[in-house]
Length: 252
Image 1 (cartoon, rainbow, N blue to C red):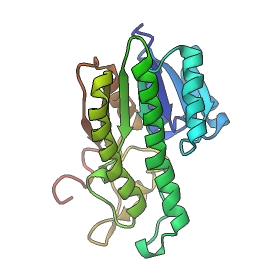
Image 2 (cartoon, helix red, strand yellow):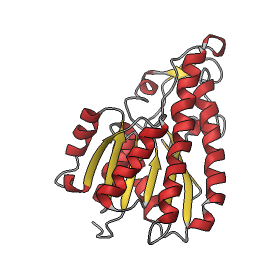
Image 3 (cartoon, rainbow, N blue to C red):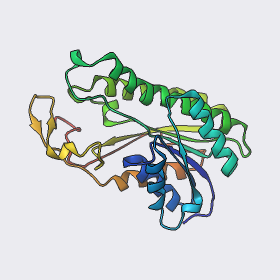
Image 4 (cartoon, rainbow, N blue to C red):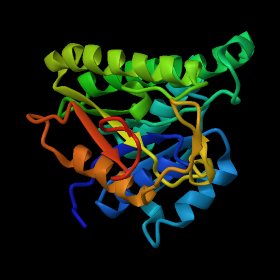
């Protein structure tokens, strides 16, 4: 374990990729703020930190709320003094179904969390990182394989994940003058509750239903930590981590 004592915020940290990344960061010597909607789920995740819970803080957060995001960063700075890393991970999908049946309410919910939430967290991170000493920090955005290639029936999720790439590239430029590095991790088929259905069979582009290989979500957590560990003079702008045999490269 490193003794660098850097501070990281992970959104959507109660389960799945967020929890795996938060635990990997704690293991790597970070003090980690677990942000998510449910306090009980966050506290349960922190208990998995295996003796490092003193380096963890649960902050119930609605990333779609400007006030809630501001409070998240204020509590982090109050507790740990600064913010070195933000993993913008919180995200949701809309209920499955055809494009023409997607309600405006479900569309807006995905946009509010996946896109507006990421903007709000990024904006707040910029404010803190450019003003602290030493200056700067790193922001890692959770994109998706869907930022490159959509699945059938995923218009809201895919549109927001394409937009995440726009946030990443623009923030990477805007962050340069403040020593803020911004990158994106695009994940394909990590074994989480959200992705469990893939093992049972999901729609393919040719109209068939087929099971897809999954990978251990802890590999994703370690990849996020590797990105976070880089010195600020270096940046992984985009990393794709995927189940080796999933249908993405080539034609399946």
